[in-house]
Length: 283
Ligand code: SF4
Image 1 (tube, helix red, strand yellow):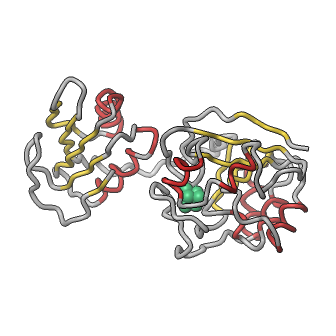
Image 2 (image 1 turned 120 degrees about the horizontal axis):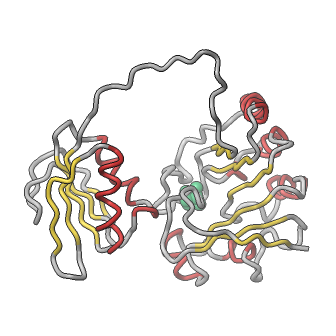
């Protein structure tokens, strides 16, 4: 999967000249393709054309629906053979700016699930990470003070579930305080399960309330396939959370949830989950 990062210029494709091109490979719309498209669209002007190539059959159905939903126009479509690949030229349409809405004091509807990015640095640098996390990424840590205020507000509005994600949350030195700030909510930490084998991160792990769920994404049950997306050796940590031998969270006695799919989804770890997690309990 590639995104043409060059300047907007006419690029010839089977759907005509386009200003920018996204080759989505075999990604489907739920596994990161829409993020690539959205990122490319931001770099275009009103009326420009984005070329999209896809080898995934579901995209032929889903992409026009997405374009209609967001207000862009599918200008041209082309399929090379009955089995693909499919080509689209999507014209960027910038609608009129939304007018500011005022209410008469009605409570703002709120979802029951809050996702909080604890930090943006990560020990891994997965190719598809939508947070663009890596060891070199700026940490941009959520502070416990802000977390307490936000989580309290969320609780008061009827929120029930808190997902702490990143980046790798266990790289945040105050993760324990962030988890405590979410007391009273159903709390899940999304982790790659690789960095808490020892030291202060291990201590943080051991001190967690056992009602906290650890959710670990596996790109495949086969470590080699998992490693191809996430880096050599990365399958060893998550393998423990999936119930196989390994160093991570085994035996510490709190709920773990693993999600597995055969293609990468947008990180950070189940961010755009199209999987159906199965909850596992250890110890
Ligand atoms: S997808 Fe998850 S593990 Fe991979 S770089 Fe992003 S935050 Fe880290």
